Length: 625
Image 1 (cartoon, one colour):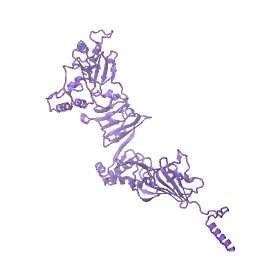
Image 2 (spheres, helix red, strand yellow):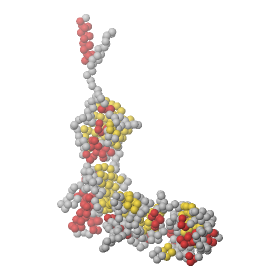
Image 3 (cartoon, helix red, strand yellow):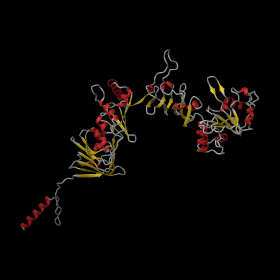
Image 4 (spheres, one colour):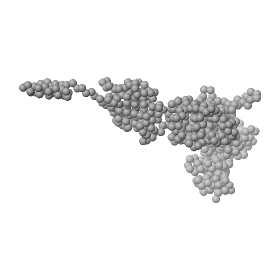
């Protein structure tokens, strides 16, 4: 019996040491207290549509994020919206190591603020190359955090400037960043397609970071107006960083260097340029060849309170004005004695300008003088171009003559310059809000239609149109439809001829006023029509320019090749004929008759070729056989 008691006691002691229970028949279970403690915790943390879990290991103090997709956000607009699962009550969270595994593509806001415990020692953040979005700002400024990841990954380009990045290899798919900030404050952006690096901001360039990230692999680098070069100069006070950039481009080991003349880097280049001229004894051509730099131009030129800037591109010789509002004034039409009245604009210093572009948003261009630009030419082939948007509605004086003017049909510029022989107007689309509608109905019962392309004004019946009702269209000719009916004279008109027809004849006849000459604009009418009868009754002595070149019978008068009915045959007719041939423009019967340049009775590309042969003197007359 004693032996049995000893054996039972020994068994009970063994079980209790193992933390187990022993239950005798008909008795209560004996429970031993556990001496082990939980070491791992886990849960889900994926954003909507993502399969992401977290695991925290208390022994290694490591928080691991696994799965696919994005980690949920814990902060929104600066306010906490959710507490991470690993920080729940009862979990002894003291992480010093956070791992985001491959498969995670993005991390929600607030993760970085909650991924470590309260340790004041070194912290380790390890991020896979699959992550492409993560708010790291709170950790970048924490000098206790070290960043582990693959070089040339998104994570690498986000943290490399801290000098606390530790490489775990090179990314399989290299990430090309499009923007960033150097440690010394300057910002940069990279255009992948053009391989252009733009360095901007009012901070300083960090030379080592500049060289590592596109400073050598880009094809062009543009230094902004306020960006500062690294403070590294030689005994002559010349900036060595700028010299290095120019030397690399010269040796084809670096990108083309582009500077703004009136900039911090531009001032450094001027010092460098002057030193080379003075010390080397070489001329400007030699210095430009051996130390090439592209000088970009830009500046402000808006009136007070308006934001307009100008930019000059030397490669295309194009000066562009951008912004909103009115241009600053550079000309005084009533200058004091001894003054020319104009001040030299900033863009006028040594720039050869052939093309001027005003962008949409500019409303008032003030005076535009030829002295402002290098555009003086006497031959159309060398004429400069000026492009003006619909928004320009105000200006002073006239544009410099001998310009090709590009502007929308229907714009204020169009109505001012389209019919001026000192310019060549070229339509660039149609204004969204034209100054005048191109169609209308007269109180006399008739209607009109004006065509931008052909500059033909068509009058249709029944009824007629009073010339005084017509907007200021720059028409070249008038086509009177056969159904037009001529109304009786108003009661206060005492002459026997028709006053309405007289107005049209007088408005379209040739006029020489000394300083102004207006060529006749022909009117085409149907033989035997009411208009013809009324026009015949108008005495020539009543017309300022006589009846020469005014009215023509459609059936009897046809100038083959004169597609736009301006009384002459030139290249503008060839352009219009091609548009008709491809169906983009429709014309009246007389115009179609004039366009039949090969005499086959139809209008096609063959007529365009025939007209071109005539214009280059390969054919003596039209129509050709």
